[in-house]
Image 1 (cartoon, rainbow over the protein chains, first blue to last red):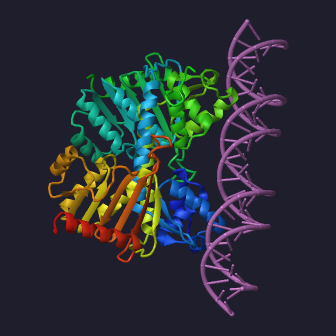
Image 2 (image 1 turned 90 degrees about the vertical axis):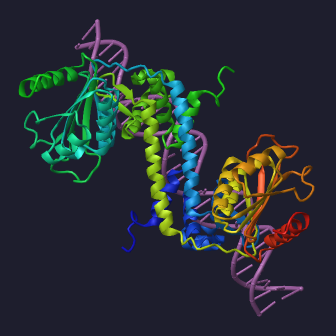
Image 3 (image 1 turned 180 degrees about the vertical axis):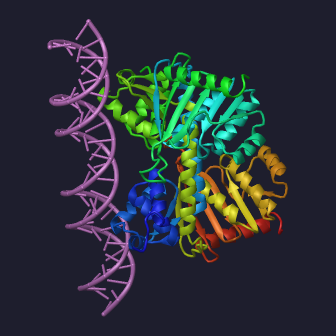
Length: 266
Length: 266
DNA sequence: CACTAATTCACTCAGTTAATCACAAAAACC
DNA sequence: GGTTTTTGTGATTAACTGAGTGAATTAGTG
């Protein structure tokens, strides 16, 4: 077919506008008006598939939001604000909302350190896993050990590691190719780079990390062979926290042993 | 009653979370978990009024979004990310969406200068009116005349006027008390301050503006006496654009006459 | 093995919104 | 001036989503 819905700017815009809380009609009407600039209900109905009689309601909704102005004539004319202004508007709106949410949650959250001992938690999806990793690095104050395949040593992680090092946290990294090692030595000079601990390459490798010997995370990439090759939600991790957590215990044992044995005793 | 819903951080947070696209159950569950830190379905159901049997669905939804992790034990335990991380997450998410929307709309909008001649458009609500004013100032390149009551000479307008002045646009302001005039002279030194043109004080005064003698806007505050005194949606404006627009013609005549007559001829 | 708690699943009900239709008012056109 | 088309408003119906409830299955516990 001629138009691929995922590429068509119309569909994309409509999709996003709905996400911002507009009704389907309002979103489609807005997009139609954006390419028209100014138009009547008939014009809008022609190029969008909004029933003509419903354009009026949709425009009212948009007018409420300050996105469209109405000319009281017959036929009514509808004027749409510029794309730039619209986006600025949404950004402000959302910024305001985020602020409200932040303060509300802060008032609420006792933020008492959740010292879970026994449990092992699951996280799915690379973004979510990265979040946990970042949080662990952020709250570490002595040591971070991070074994990873290269595709998972992303910029945000390096940033967080750099911050940690500045706080005096000792960083130990593994699983990195020689080229990237150079980069790391530049960005995080104090980091200790050690070789990967076990046979790593032919497994659906993900990452293994430990912070302060009390927070650990292990992940695998689930689409090593089959599954859609570019599915971003293909990482699955488990993590545990607390000195007596079993996962923590296992990893601490392994790391301590290998680090002291294979490399240096610090 | 003991709890005012508009002040209760729980209600506020739930409200905002729903705006961000979470279901009612998911939002309430999240808030409950935020004050708990870690909890079971029972815990959540006790302090929120989510039916126990539905906590699981809600948690699934939150897990999908990376806001909650699940411990596969019995009873299941749920762990919630910190308030800070949550808000960071939403901010990123929304930023991404706004970017997508912006590019999509840019591809779409011909952004051809909408030169409307005859029409007079309506705008309601102070934020929306301010938007139009800002846009007119932004696109002016010779002259801006702005008469206003003080409460409508807000910071964002002053900023935009300052920018305009830097571009070499001549600014003419009226309707400002002596104290504020000093402020203006400091912020926008080149601005010409002229006295209000007609009896202004006993009307439900709003603003009158003209940009480049081709874009004009007139507003009134509709709740001068009655109506809820602090209703923000109480300003109503009309605007017109183009050399031959009737509203433009009228205002141009008045301003030119009064400015040359009463003050100076520039 | 029996009993209880926990979890999942299936179903109902209500509210919302899309969509269609019918009608009144206004414009345009003989 | 009457007729026809266009425009705007309101009512009505259909479809869908999501809240809420309860039954059925599973997992712990004594």
